[in-house]
Image (cartoon, rainbow, N blue to C red; front, side, top):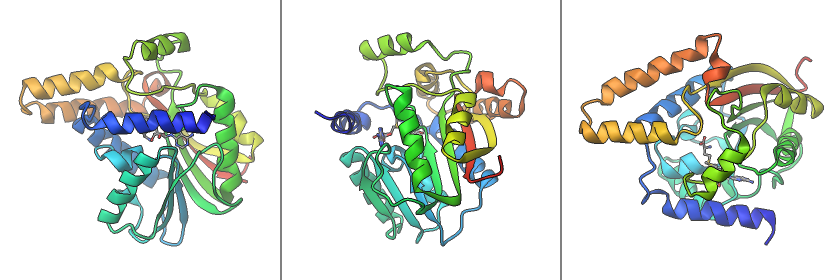
Length: 274
Ligand SMILES: C[S@@+](CC[C@H](N)C(=O)[O-])C[C@H]1O[C@@H](n2cnc3c(N)ncnc32)[C@H](O)[C@@H]1O
């Protein structure tokens, strides 16, 4: 079985079990959605004529963390891809429910995009590239994103932040996955400096960078805590949890943001000033 087939099979399996396993965390999802909307609207202005690529469709398929349909105009020329046909089908049906019928929702591999060179104005890649077993695959995917992006086009990318104080050595992550404690495959990631170098080599310049969503990696404990508190208080603590999460988010404005952020986030421009 080839690598994309294996990936597709894995993510299809994750998708089939996702709703039943109760992984949805409404309040963390709400915070993630707000954080992404804030980040993207701060870093770029989305206009009707742009061709926009989204590099995975997990959140669009499963709801609570979904932000993409909220920030692109309904008739936008969007291309959403995902390696899993199940995820693409569910995301497409959610898109149609929202009148996003001008978009294309395709099954494909971000490391081998079914798109022409220099054809995309804006790419949004939220934690897609940190699900590969090797750094080389992350670089291949970055090269693909660089290839399809127009000159002057913008890439907004987030990946797991390995400077987070709780980011474990990869052998621990591997063990964690072997024991069945991770809901899906967690891959390698790049440091901010390595990412900057890789982007520079393919002609993209980082214009903005930050760290977002300030809680530990992996986030299983936080997810469990949110669900337990909500369940035991029958929702009475929801507002307190919201306030707590908003408080943690303020760490983005602090000097230690790269020690606490779950993801690094960059805005890079193709052919931008070096
Ligand atoms: C855990 S989800 C990430 C979800 C979301 N973007 C987030 O911020 O958490 C990973 C997603 O990437 C997709 N994916 C994994 N490998 C891919 C590849 N090679 N090409 C395109 N999509 C891929 C999976 O099918 C899945 O939808």
